Image (cartoon, rainbow, N blue to C red; front, side):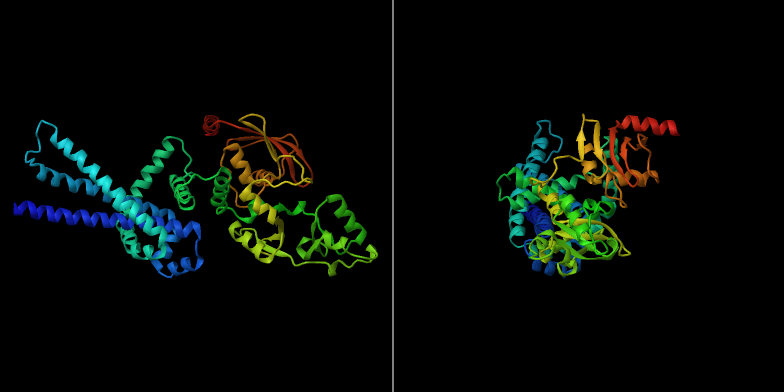
Length: 440
């Protein structure tokens, strides 16, 4: 009897330890999601990052979540195995090869108890604690995550290799990592208080997550499409430009866009009382905002709002103007297309069927990629026309057909400087493989 009591005591201690470890893993996971995505308190985030281990976890969120989930899984499996000998002793099962199915029943019951304990004590309780006190919880569990990452590193590398091989086997794009959906689901649980999100709120939330990966260059208006007031032109010429273009804001430049001195709002000119031919545009200019082409959109939006400006130029590393961006462009990344009564209804991407598309040369590359279902990546250009020219290394000819990966592109309209419109046929993956095989 004493032997059984001692065994139960030791087993109970092991169960308690595994539950505590599992609780720490779960608490760490939800604390990370809370701090990383909800930004509930920037001061709290800064305080959490004061600890080096916490800062490292936040910066490498994907890898950290893999470590945490593997640790929680190991704890659950460990609980199941610990309960097997406990239940066998309690039920008096000394013979492991009984034919009455008792061992199978004991194993099933053991893992059922392990899952129940893990779900209640090791999941719900630490989750609630983490959501209420994420900073304290993360600091308390950081040591375990860091130690587990060191210990699990070889095993995780093997699992990642197997995962990539399995995804390739089923022809699943590696860029669509499974953890993204998991993180999004957890974010929904954090912001919806258990209620189903309205469709608009869900759309905006998904767009917020997607915007984290985008930079200003992804939505810029190219330099050759920017209309501006030139100090070297007469006031009549500048006003005629404003009349024909229909825009309300114009960069004010001295010769070209690289010498931009401010922004003119057409409303300020209409308020002028006097002879329009005597207007000094320098007296009406407003400050011009500039962003680097690789500035993240999540940084662009707060700077627009803080400066109370709606228009900015994008510059390269040498200070040259590459394009322009507006507050409306950024907001459209969150809420979708914004149109007023003066906007044209023309779409930059139109589908004929599921494999043929009419695509404007100014269509953003990431919008084209989403619309046609083919991954297109380019760090040098932001428009589809620019992507084609960049890949070819030259301007294509009118009605020329080019092949870029799975895309068969016919250039239907061009001018001297850019591709205006294209007809794109998306080929099946088998067709691309056949062409690659023929080329070899």
